[in-house]
Length: 183
Image 1 (cartoon, helix red, strand yellow):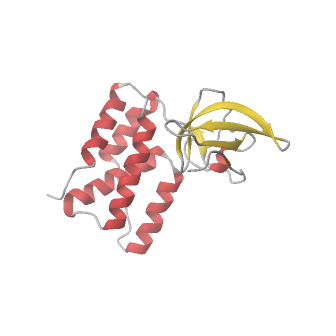
Image 2: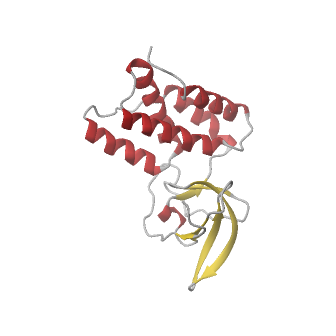
């Protein structure tokens, strides 16, 4: 996201595990949020534009700002950022997660792209674990390696700023995954 302000429309309602059976979350200034595919941001205010209310989200380390409809934040992929309470599960997924990745290249790329675009940290951790296994076993083709690195970057963003022991373990595991080579 390289513009200084982006207004995100909201129509689609997410069906991820974290949202199942829940009302749309309400956010307040200061809340950490994930806006897929842009990354972790912080709600700085709620504002009114063109007769509708929007969350203004700023992204650390950038001058970018997104405006997300208050009425449908999940419609643009905005959700609460991962918390310290959730890092033990994330760590387990990174260590033990399994996904049956399709062997045919084009079908696998569609599958991997869907996971990356979902922004769900637990699905990303499972994908990362599986691609890490593939990488250590026999190396990754270029597009799979790119997906692996993208998943790692998204997870690194999720745990940045969390200071519990499991978050540190997640950061260490992700850091070591960058440099692993086939055995």
